[in-house]
Image (cartoon, rainbow, N blue to C red; front, side, top):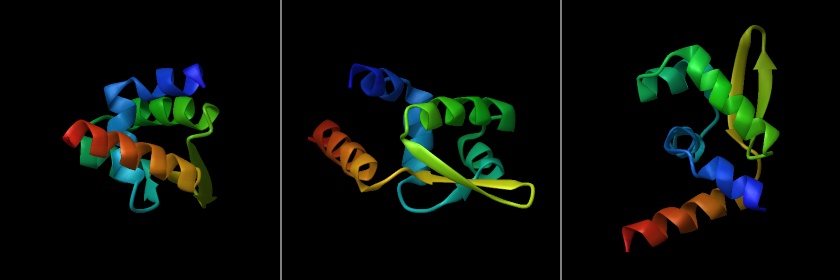
Length: 85
């Protein structure tokens, strides 16, 4: 569990997860949304994938990412709500 929170402790990864909260998104669109390079986004997504926080699917050469499951959404949602209070 500590490993998951360590992964979530990175601001860039949290920004990526927020982009993924509402929809499946390709790497290029995540990079554009966050003003980052695709390779930097891909590196962070690999860490998120290894922590089982995101999942992916391929459509030709395009890779789409989404949150791994409803538990990840809930974890992020509760965390964001807590910070907003």
